[in-house]
Length: 126
Image 1 (cartoon, rainbow, N blue to C red):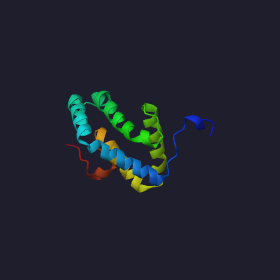
Image 2 (image 1 turned 90 degrees about the horizontal axis):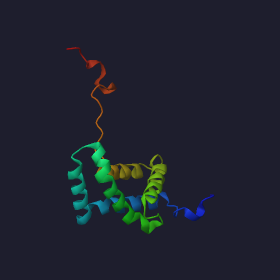
Image 3 (image 1 turned 60 degrees about the vertical axis):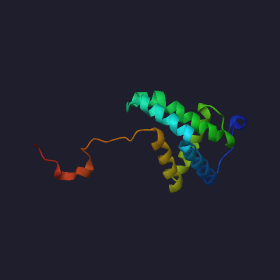
Image 4 (image 1 turned 90 degrees about the vertical axis):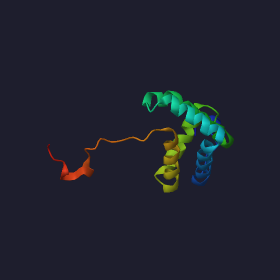
């Protein structure tokens, strides 16, 4: 651990669940819901504008929660928290689920083209 001085307090999987739950709840707070709605309206369902308008608001909301757990109150703190959560996702289905819920709050759903393996051999030439 070479950079121990700048490292946030390590969270256990259980602590990560608590923090993720608090972050998700923070998005439901009336003032934050209004901020996210305004950003969503400004983005007009455009992916580039989503990144421009929604991501900064989502980052600020997360920062307000995670700073109480030893993460820096900046973009780097949010990235460190995201990496920590990602490291637990494969081991803990509940963390993976909470992480998915969090991402769904500020990232639009990704739609795949309809021509996937699920369509099987029912693809007919018209």
